[in-house]
Image (cartoon, rainbow, N blue to C red; front, side, top):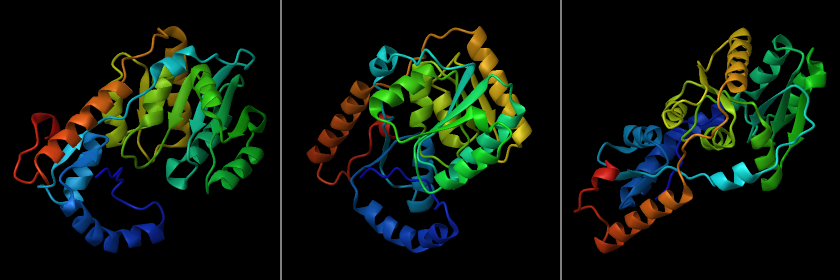
Length: 265
């Protein structure tokens, strides 16, 4: 079983629905010979909500590094390129990044990719901003364009309140962007893989002034430091771990009588 579990809903209704869902979820998880988690942070949530005895294995998603490094950056972008986005949901707090733009230098431009239920509100906020001319909505992008934007960004910003992993954090870092990210367990864990790479952490309730300051620090670090990409997880390593997990489970029935390997603890 693979869960990608956040441990909560992201609206009041979804949070209420999590109560009966956890009862059903405990039964579903209890049928699994092994639960594959994408981070230690997710495994902690699984064991918190469904039991300490749940057999788990952490398998970090990989990054196709070559695709990002071979992507051609946009060469006609003005000033400092800031990037945010993904699935545009309220808990991602892209609106706070938009608010911070008025406090950033006039050569800073924010590009927001993706779509979702929060998109209309973000667009309205951007139009009303003092920095309206420097905030650009990109919408949903093709994979090729997404790689080009990741390669072009000086700073990637993600202020999400909850995540099971941090794929865009890893991908944009692999493409060379400095990071401004919320201080949540999954992001803290992913940043641990980016040793030497410029990363600024913010609390999930950081003020607009603090967000702007962190973006400026990250932009300066990206400008002054090395642009060499960090070492990040690969798809080959992920496939090897998943294949080994399936072989172990299939070789031992439901796997309950066999303790997980050291990699799964």
